[in-house]
Amino acid sequence: MATRSKSAKPRKTAKAALAPRFQPLRWLMRWLWRVVFVAAALVLLMALLYKVVNPPTTLYMLSEGRRLGADVDQKWVPADRVAPVMLRSVVAAEDANFCTHWGFDMNAIRDAIEGGGARGASTLTQQVVKNAYLWQGRTYTRKALEALITPVVEGVWSKRRILEVYLNIAEFDEGVFGVEAAAYHYFGVGPDALSPTQAARLAAILPNPKGRSAANPSNFVRRRAASIRDGAATIARDGRAACFEPG
View 1: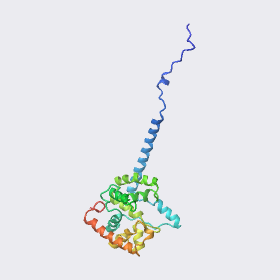
View 2: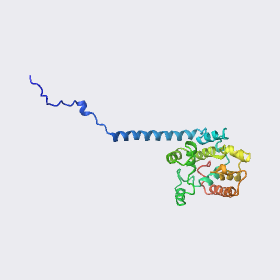
View 3: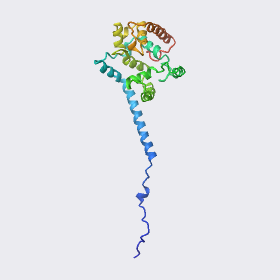
View 4: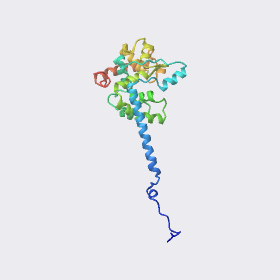
């Protein structure tokens, strides 16, 4: 009986021949896509959650509460119980093109770049994303996350919902958050009873509420409030309030 030569190489089994080679680049891309998918799903879920659930607090409120050693003054109020002129005043003060952009005001960004960054270009949507989901500060990480979440919020929320959330979590004085607390704090009235002048003054102290007062306004705040009051009336006339006012 013939014997196999010692020099003959054993044949590879079919299983070994068919085994795929490990490809690091393909493995890395597969996991990268998985991470991107999970991150996108989380962002969408967060946006959907606050579309129907009112944010109970924010990181900044918690931080201010710890710093002050007391609970902050904040009570949620629906947009239907806020004087319409307050919504128009905030838009006139912070984001006059609110109804026409998709979360980023490219004209404002262009003007800010040309002005050397001396003026801000954040839209109300960006401010809501920062206040509701993220933290304060100008880090690249926060700005990148803000840029990713902002268009999702714009796509999921209504413009009126964006304003409603903004007015309820914005800071109006040290430890005073939201238009409900601010209206009583400064003027002793509910947010539904704010006059055009009072609404304009509340909008005028943004985004520096700790350094400005709506009840005892400086000359700067008075001038800014007068401009905001005119702007609120203008956007009501020219239709730029249509996206957030009931039909």
